[in-house]
Image 1 (cartoon, protein in one colour):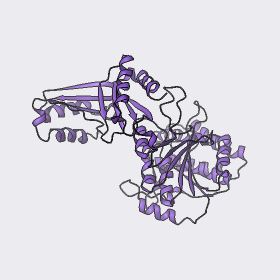
Image 2 (tube, rainbow, N blue to C red):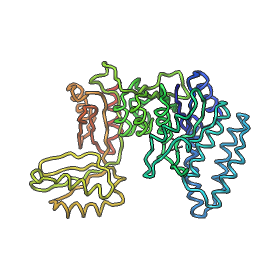
Image 3 (cartoon, rainbow, N blue to C red):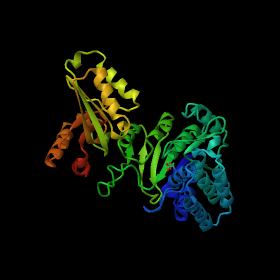
Image 4 (tube, rainbow, N blue to C red):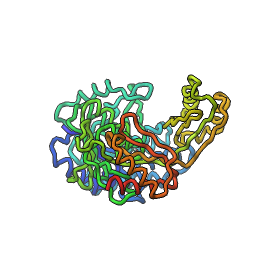
Length: 435
Ligand code: ASP
C-alpha cells in the first residue's frame, strides 16, 4: 500500500486535480491520499492557506474581509464546477463564514478548512472515502504528536480502504483542532505512512525530486536520484525546501522510504530517500544548499579556554532568550556563536548586556549579513581533492570565507560567506563540484 501526499501546487486548479487522478489511477496501490489546500498555479495566485490566515487577522481586528473571502470561495467553487462535482461546497463555505463572523472559530479551526474542503472535493473526484484528519492525527496536551494514539486510530482503517485525508492538522483528545507548522501536510503524510506501515510514502510536488542546488540560483539543476534521511536533513535544514524537515522522522523510524515525485512530470524518476546509500556515492558531493541572514557573536575573554563551564554559561544565556544556536566556532581566548538574525531581532540589545555582564567578557563583536552554504555528501570530508577544489573555487571567485564547520559525521562542510557573495559562491561551487 502506498501513502501519497499532494502539495498545494499539485492542487491549484481543476487541471491539477486531473493530473492527480491520473497518477492515482495509474497504480492501484495508491490507496491513501493526503492533500494540502489549493496552492499557487502561477506566481500571481495566492495560496489558500495564506488567504485564510489573512482573513482571520482581518476578522480579529474588525476589518472587512469580503473580497478575500470571495477569492477563497471562488477558488473552491471553480474547481467543483469545472470537475462537475456535487459536494455542496457553497453550504460548507457559508457555514464557516457564519461561524467566523460569530467569533466561534480559532485560527486553527479556520485555516484547517483549506485542507478540509480540498480533501472533500478530491475524495468525491477520486471516488475515495473522506477521512477527517482530526479523527486520526492526535496531539498530546503539550502540542507534540501522540504517535501511539495516532497509530491506533489509523490501524482501525480497514485494509484496502481507499481514502482521502486532509493534511496539516489533527486534534487534541478533546477534539479541538490543532495545525502543524507551515508546510505541515508533509508531516501528516509521514505519520500516516508510518502508522499504517505503508510500503512507500510518495510525496508529489512541483519539482522532480530534491535538486542538487537551488533552481532560483543555478539553471536547471538535476534531481538527486537517491538520498539518505541524514543527507536529506542536512540539505533541508539549510534551505532545500522540497520536504518539511520534520517529516522524515516518522517514516525513517518505521523504515519506510520516501519517494519525492513531480505531479507535472510523473514519469520522472524523482528522488528516493531511504537509509541505504549506493557505494559509488562515497566521498562525493551530492548537493549544495544554503541560507542568508545569519549573525555571529564573537566573545573575547582572557584565559577563557581554562575557565571550566564558560561554554555552558554562554549557551545558557542564548537559551534563556529562546535563541537557537546554530554553530559554535572556538578559538583559545574567544568563542563565536552563530545564530539566525531573525532569532535575535527581538532581544539583541538585552542579550549583549547580559552576555557582557554575566560572562565578564573583555569584548563582544557582532558580525551581520552572513550566509551559510552547506556542501553535502557522505564522507566528503575524507576527500582531500574535493576540499582543495572547494577552497580554490572560492579563492578564484575572490570570495572570502568567514567561517568553516564540518559535521562530526563527515556528512557536510558548512562555509560562511558574506550575504552579498552568497549567489556567486553557490554558482561557483555548483559549477566546480556538481556539473
Ligand atoms: N497548506 C499549508 C501551508 O501552506 C500546509 C501544507 O501545504 O503543507 O503551509
